[in-house]
Length: 468
Image 1 (cartoon, helix red, strand yellow):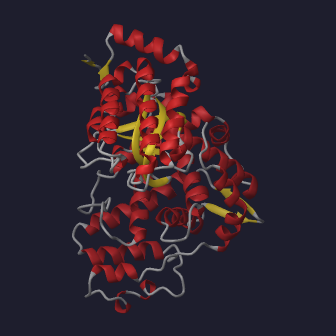
Image 2 (tube, rainbow, N blue to C red; image 1 turned 135 degrees about the horizontal axis):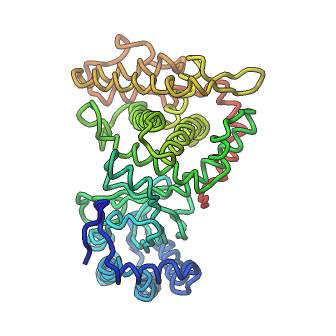
Image 3 (tube, rainbow, N blue to C red; image 1 turned 30 degrees about the vertical axis):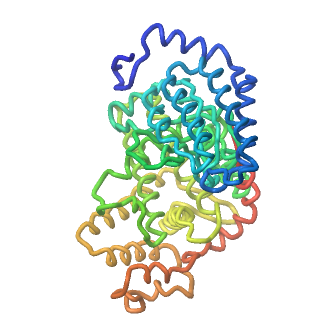
């Protein structure tokens, strides 16, 4: 059906592409289409009957649930003309819903349909998809409820060139929301196939991020932080805060490099710590390592005269986005219960402050912009060195060295056992004993952040469910 394109992604034939352009782009009222509204309503109604694992155990609800499923199946059929590129997947979804009904609404299994859905194979700017699965939404809901989402691929030309030439990442898929059911009226900004209800989890070939939500959330928080701290921005950084599309494209560049970094470099055997019970600050270091690698690469792209002007511009903007999102949003978002992203944001802020690049004077924040890139890179180098040395270290020694790196910049809680060093810890016992001794808030907020959080918390909360 498709031929290989120069970018290494499936390319539309002339006829299919023409049909795609007609059905996708000539009907902007897709989100008001009666079939979509019917599907959305039926999926939302099903959620009130489902329990956490996605099943509907109460037989009293089965007749109504059957009617809602039939409405979903009919709506998918009617909407399929918008999505000729997803024909096999949509047919499989209809069949999976049918099997769910026939099985008495037990725990759903949508393995067949998720295996047919591969949106990363069509990374063409503007391609749309209808997503309908029983699934949980990360940072949203842990319930595997039936969710329905209309999405649009974002794939600017300069990103396609970067991915093809310098940062290959065939799994990465940037998206824009068109509409969604309640599971995405939350803080969730990702779509991962692993979240779908299925009997087994195969190896998947894509993972998606909603760049429009990330950009809109960033801009909202950034505007408030600038106002509260009286931070004077360079003109380009101010433009980033003002322009939604520019911010979206900048976040795509950041996430493209971040995402591929999780398995790149001189790393311990499993740097992502998948399904392992590790000290929570290690997760923070891993996420920060990937962000600071993206920062370092953006500095290189900016300073590389062979890069296009558009690439260099977005590379400079990505540096601002990484720093600002980390220190203004990540550091004070969520609870203080083992919040690894918060610790990473605190660490970056404190590092910049202690290295004389960030200043809080006369109740105003200022940054030495010329010194910022190399100082951020220095923190990335310190984390990279930790990882390189950890290849030859036992796990406990790695944990202790990582804690020392964080604690050399952030002040631990006075009641911390870990802060007392190896002699105070049960290093000869099970690893779980070490993890259990970490305080939920091992690295409390500084006085600066306590004050900032009081002013920023309502703004951050307001971004729940935000769309561009």
